[in-house]
Image (tube, rainbow, N blue to C red; front, side, top):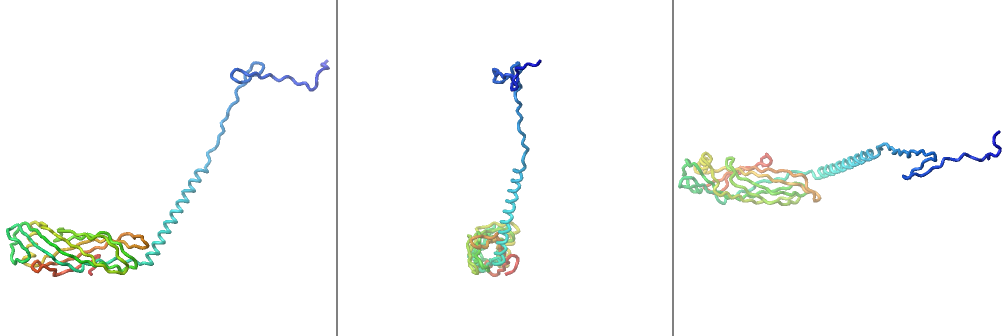
Amino acid sequence: MPPTNMNPNHQPHAREMRPTANGDHNHGDGLIAPPPQRHDAYYPRSSSSSASFKGCCCCLFLLFSFLALLVLAVVLIIVLAVKPKKPQFDLQQVGVQYMGISTSNPSSFDGTATDVTTTATTASLSLTIHMLFTAVNPNKVGIKYGESRFTVMYRGIPLGRASVPGFYQEAHSTRNVEATIAVDRASLMQADAADLIRDASLNDRVELRVLGDVGAKIRVLDFDSPGVQVSVDCAIVISPRKQSLTYKQCGFDGLSV
């Protein structure tokens, strides 16, 4: 017969958990419970950061494109409104202050002799000329000129140079620019020396060439445009006997002026 004193609310005793030396608990029957396993959570890599980076790049690209188009539109408006033209830079006058020719022979040609031997193997040319240029600005805005350099040549041989400091020229104005080229005993050898002696003594004409590059920038609202180059190419003929200029022809950017 089943016992009659059983309490219906009676439950079997649970196994007693006893702590061990290392802090773990074991069951009353001596079995050690395995430590709980730790599972690291796995988070899939999100693409939100890469999408944000691409979005920033697109925004920057659009911003720079807009700024570039805006600058281009402003430049086009200024060009259409101003209609810039190249300035004119022309050689107006040439004053011969001195011209002398020395040869390897004892005699020398100073512009007064009428007969000088042309068999010299070397010759030196001394020359001082004063040049007056005219700068014309046909634009509605001012022009800023950089330093200009001019070279005088004889048969392709550089003899001397002159420089003109930069300056600013107002709109619709004309300005005179002066430069002096001094040549001190520039040596010429053999054929060139013979040609110089023959031109001076027999023909009374020494043809020289003046070359120059003038850099200019159009200034609008304190901003300078990209530089434009104005070329000066002049042929001048000097009479050694008269110590004066007898001929001048200049070219402006390849065009006769």
